[in-house]
Amino acid sequence: MNTRWVRLKSFLTVLLATLVTTCVTSPPALPSLTPTRRATRTLTPTLTPTLTPTPIRVEPRALRGDLANQISNMEEAMPTAGSERFVIPTEVEKAAFAELVTRLMGGETAWAGGLAAQNGYELLAYTDRGDGNAKSWILRELKPTRQGWGLYVFRAKPLNEIIIEAPHPLADEGTPSVALAMYRALHARALLIAGAHRRANADGSADAAHTTQSVFESVHEALTGAGTPIVLQIHGFASGKHPGYPQIILSHDLGVETELLDELSAALTAQGLTVGVCDGAKWQALCGETNVQSRHMADGLFIHFELDETVRSDDQRLLAALALVFKCGGACTQR
Image 1 (cartoon, rainbow, N blue to C red):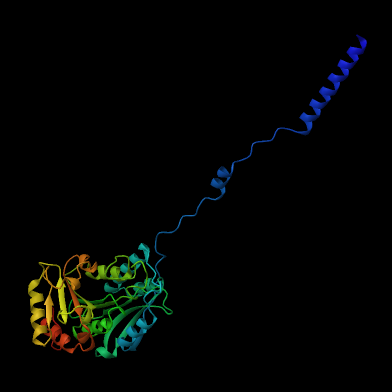
Image 2: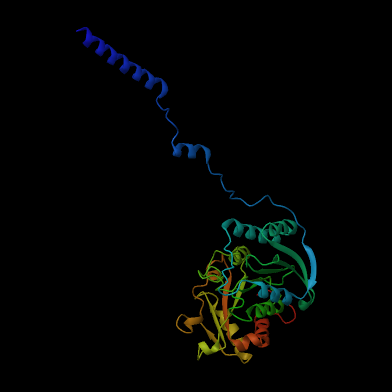
């Protein structure tokens, strides 16, 4: 019995020593924060500002020259077809340009100049030698061209409420030059020229006449949000691709101001030009039925011009007809 007791005692002593050592040297692990909880506490995202920067005042500098050169310089530098260089403006940027135009029209030129500077643009007090030294405000992108948002001209003392638009530079060759000639001849209120080839981006985002997500559209809406302006938007087509079509196709929102369109057609015909007026059945390929600017006017009249290459290369008869219709024999008067 004594021998068995000794062995049992020895066994219990060893087992107890082992348990004590384990408890002392290997304490239970403390719970740690899970990765999810740690990330939640330390990686809280910073909110992105949604407002424009604090407005600043920048007095427009004076410049004298030929507005035709401003347009040709822009065309040389603008995003070309397939370049993927047109930058889609954000809603904040669009709102900034709308406010810029509103302030400029209200005589707040320094505030307008500040908004231009904050968005990669420059506002100029421009004297146009090609327009009898008429004074205009020019809104142009700073060099080098990075956005492709366009060139905008506002006459300091307009004699009517006509707005001239050229949404497809390069693609509709010569239309910016025709639009400038019309701006000058009609003593128009504003001239809008888009800043990129309509196919600069593969997704169609650079096509100013078919997207609302553009500075071109923002300026258009700011100018046409009040009053009863007349918008003349200029496009071009190749006669070889449209056999049997007249030299000029006129279109507008059906049922609106057909009298004026008839007057325009008669004046152009009297100048020896062939003219077609869209009526919902004829000339459908060039009637501009999907044009977004025509759908975004509070009031007034939108007229869509399609000009073939012969009219774009020699616009004198077109200008003579427009001057007659809009009473611009030397000085425009409102209709």
